[in-house]
Length: 468
Image (cartoon, rainbow, N blue to C red; front, side, top):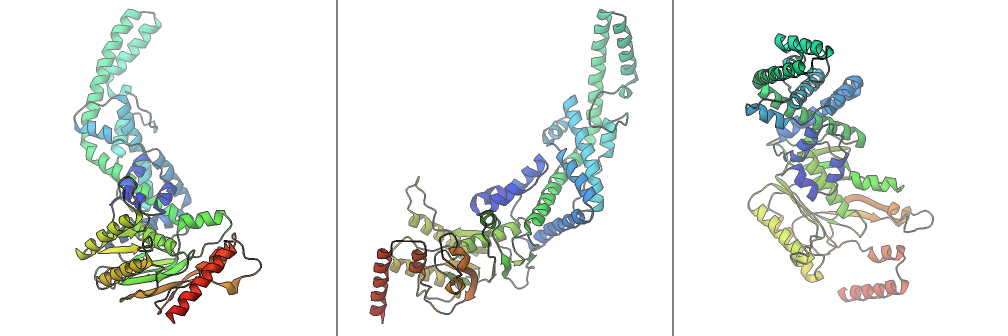
């Protein structure tokens, strides 16, 4: 999987990619094609490079500023390099592109010599070749110094033109054009010896642009560098202060606080219960996003984090209705869960996130399906998080509950605007199979018709008496 695919699947990932301050077209192209990394060593190397840039940006702002400005001058010259490889004589625009790129790389190398995160070839000779008069500017021209014959001819043209000898001047001009074409051919031949260096430099600059954007994002959003589980070590994921940047930003813009959560995810089934509005879905989205960010080499939204790499994040959100194919929400959900089970049975190391499994079918069968999934995945040795409203879920699993609504914290009037302020989103271990029953109380807070709620309470009381 590449980033361009992940932004369509992982909630909040596009928001972060859009916030990246990439300076070049090649950087924007590279981030979209960046592949999913599964090897812990590869991920750690990428994270280390990002950390080095963060340190340099903090300790040497002037150098970092020059580096970023040089990145802005970089254009995508892959087409020009391709023409160079095809032995096509380059025109003045293409020679200018190479000169401008070489000039930018020379400036960027001043940063990489101080912060050696990416190896860039030295293109000083390329710039000198295209700047024979040592002007130090990116503009390109067929300079007189390239050909004494051309210099003499241009001088003669100026003299003839000032004397008003237009016919002679035109003939001399055509001769100068022939010499200029020959010079372009000679320059192209010389530049062919640098085509591999130019290609390597272009890829290196694209990587540098992505790294500096990741570093800046980490500082802006207070992200942390995750510890990646080493191959052969204890495999588990743990987050302290995990948050979802997009949701947090939306809440803060509306004057509300965001409560980060702590969670440990081991290669086992974890069942998460909690009332409506308790943040279970946001928790799964946050876990998916953090896993995704880590495996694309980003810092993650948490105070501290330890991440076990996986081959894929498999998500079933229960809202995958496909109207075009005629599938209901339940059908789409079941097909998604079936694919997940097939992947697990095939031995793939995946992170499974299932939100409110079977919530759109009748409760009896829905509960049975949840029990079946728990039992099937319990011994698979993969991390599984399943949120549910169903009570009585049997099977070998760890149980967590979102603390939920805390009436003892209420101060003053309780309104729709402030109700979320009295919900505790932290997770606690749970041994009971019964799920919290707070729906009617929350509906009451939301101002739902009182007669409706009273009837609902009587039904609940009747069911409780039958159970006893």
